[in-house]
Amino acid sequence: MNNRVVFFILALGLTSAAVQASETFSVIPDSAQALSIVGGRYANLSDASAVRVAPANILKMEKSELLINTAMWHSDIRFEQNGGQNVRINRPWVFPASMYYVQPLLPGRLSFGLGVSTPYGLAAYYPRGMGGGLRYALPYEANLLTVDITPALAVKITDDLGFAVGLDILYADLTMKQFYSWNNIIPGSAEGDIKIHGQGWGLGAYAGINWTIAKRHRLAVIGRLPVKVNLSGDFKASNIPPALVGTFSESSSFKSDMTFPASISVGYGFDVTDRFTVGFDFKWAQNSSHDVLPLLIGNNQALLGGSTSTVFGWRNSLDFGTGMSYQLNEHWALRGGYLYSENSQPQNSYTPLIPGNDRHVFSLGVGWRGKTRGVDLTYSCVYYPARVISGAASNPPNQYDGTYKHQWQVLAVSFTQRF
Image (cartoon, rainbow, N blue to C red):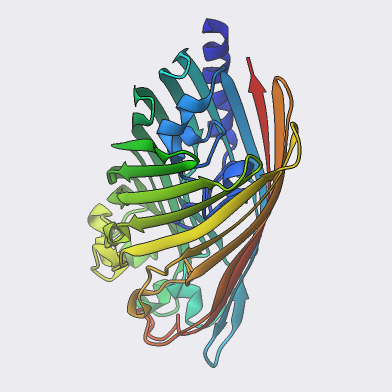
């Protein structure tokens, strides 16, 4: 056991260095099995990613299990500005990864799990050649990387009821880069760049139950507390006109904070036959925690127009869907799922940094399970209907008004090793 734990901790470090942020603040399952039954996973998920998703489910694992997940995400995100230019995110590929380990302490009665994943994030890279008002209204790079370390402990309360608690140990790293027009202050001045970078840690907790309410029928409930991360770092500005040197500085401190949402999830699982299983999920997410992003940059605050924050004003949202799996034989399983996620972003505070709308996730997957190893493969289409925005707050005004088109193609692969 000790060698396995040492290996896992070393692997966590490698994975943390390799992962990239997800496509928005919204959570998409990171294991191929979880993604394949995306709308019905809470009561039915049986791989080690249950450590974070539905922690009481790890009691089902009779042997130590290591799960490594990787994926290829390809985006098509476009913004057609009203009466202006069309821009498209120019780095369409994202390659997230995650890892989980489950160790039964008393098989079937007490289990420990540990995971590392990138549950929240954004990666928006717009063309540096943007012109017009967009050049100074929209950052050409915005990147939020999160790494969540999730230890969890699950215990069997009765033969029909399992209970688990876990921690969210969350690291966040935020970077934003944007062109800045010194000409607006000193006519004739060359433009410069401004850059914000901050990082920090936060701590939260979660708990879950898995209850066999009748033969073939299961109910899972998971509650997650919000996680507040205090960010600190630096602000940098380039090409400051000589007349402004002393008023502004090339660097200053940066401080902010972000609160990642609380949530309540409920899942129902039903074994229709010994081979065919279905699930139905519901989730409420407190996305209103993404209310305001403070931006404090010391003596350079006036460069943000005197503003000390960016207002998101997001609303709470609901997710619901279904997922199903069919066991072809001892080794092979087919899976499919659908998830609907309600949009959280109001029109007046909409931003191209996090383009979104109501989301539809369609998934198909296949899994192979051997005596000590397993492989899962899933394809998913993440589709957002086109959204027309009018009256979004921006400086200059109306720069964010237009039509947004947004979708992702995802191929996820997971490898399991049992000991």
